[in-house]
Image 1 (cartoon, rainbow, N blue to C red):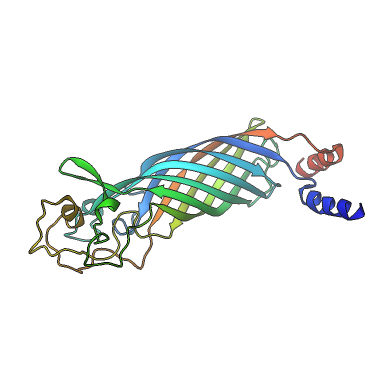
Image 2 (tube, rainbow, N blue to C red):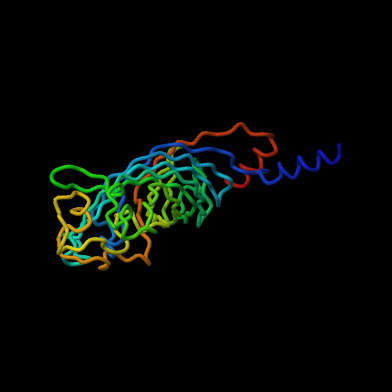
Length: 273
């Protein structure tokens, strides 16, 4: 019996005096990509993004959240001039599911008149879905299916098609404002590190020789739009992985949990007010 009580206390004590509330709401903003077709320009070719967030407050300094974000990224050599005479371009829908933690610089509680504002840092891990596409002869094509760097050819038998589901690591910073009794507004900028160099379908080398290639083939046209490259010419920077960003706003509504004991409620009021 004593052992059970001891285990129960170990489980319960970390939550003693915690704020114990959820916040739920929508998010919206912009997404953009950084990679072979846009190596330097932040916010270049930004696209709208939308989603939702569920945030759980542990205490005045730390919260955890789950995000879902749906947006679009794009890149175009003609706009960035990242590499002359390559003329690649792409766009891709991106969906992200992630778990993140937020570390407040100051004490914060939604609904508090005293602790209503704080900058914060965030980081976590997620899964992202993407599918790079381009327009050829007036039609949208899925680039991964074409094997634009020889993934389906005999010349590079070891190159396999890249996976359209990838792990990502979101991190960044923001500011948080509490107003009214239950609303919280956040503004944040966050990069997403990925572990693929194919968000843009560009990474390694060309697999065709322009002197003998028939460019009436859609795959050949997508691989080398300028018709001026040889087999094994450099096409991308394989040593650098691609990134994408979400910058935007969230507006959440506070949902209180029922307090476990009046003692916990008393400690919370003393702590926050």
